[in-house]
Length: 531
Image (cartoon, rainbow, N blue to C red; front, side, top):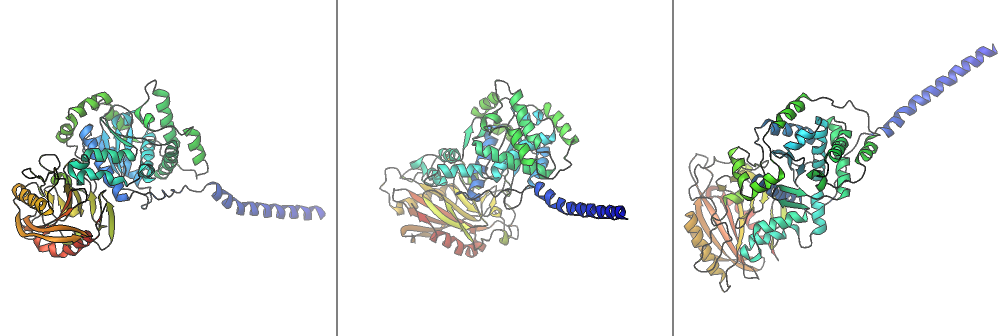
């Protein structure tokens, strides 16, 4: 009787202990197996729009200086599919409009530019032993963009504003050329433009954070994050005396493998992707792709070989949401140099490539170009201006081109049909009045573009600066709703600066729509601040 009682009591006690243990296990398991969470990148002094703009400019330079594989190539299609798979794991508030491209270079390298453009060398595809390793390199590079490392680096370096270098564009030859300005801006972001493309310099802290965030991307995409460290180790052991460019640009933050192991050890166990027939097929095909060494690419860049090479092969840079030809290119000066407003000299500042663009673009829906009421501020160096938050700022790519502020739908390969073009002239020798400069500009624009003057120059005051306002007429690059060519208003505003230069702006829209955009144009003018 006593034995039976003790036995039953023991069993009851055992059940109670097991029940308590069972209750405690989920809590313990949750604490030790919490799913990874993307960190907040934090605040940076550079806006997302400015990061995107500079990244686009840098990407366009890659297409001029490196052999980029066509969008239709199997390698590019594969990299884009893999890239989008990785992008899908990133929370929208931290993500960017990533774009993926492949460079026909033998060397192992990959880099992502501010705002999302990413380039992967064909040599990286060949070197990776499996898809997870390739995904690791790409996830690492994406993490630099997500955490905005370049913008943070720029924030440490800038003192007068990152875009102050654009003064070379706005002030013509008075402050240097546009290319120099862009090089300066990118240099502040830790990006160097070389004959082989873009080279980014990151700190060891940046590298460590990119490893950690890249591991999260891989994990959420179904890949073992350890594969990222495995690939970096492969580069170190097989690189020999000549280290791959990727390693020279990305300082090792320490024992990557150990750090990643520590990072992922408490994450819930997953069934990671093992084999990828698609990767195996592309890797074999990549081995047969005609690719080039860094020296061959450098030599080709000096001779301008790659720009025509890419164009011939159908490798053209088209940023997400943009037209194939940039607005700035469509409005660049024919001489390639800065306009000059001295008497007897030409101020080649075309608004559209020709007075009658052919073929004209189809009619655009008014709602797609109408400005929102919410305004953002753009710091262009010598001038600050507010603009609608659903419009885009396009910086010049080379000397003499315009700053463009326009809706994406208002820009066509033939020119800008809605928005603002901004540039500047620096009269030689000085001594020219604002009336003289305005008259010279109007005459040259008329000669080069066939514009007509609708109203003579009239006084206008912008934030205390006495300028001139002139209304011109030209042919819009967009057809009307009935499919006919239509006229547009081109409102020219010229504003003298203390250093003797003159900033000039052209607000554009078809005549049928101009009155609807004019209140926004006048608000943009009122917002202007000069340095």
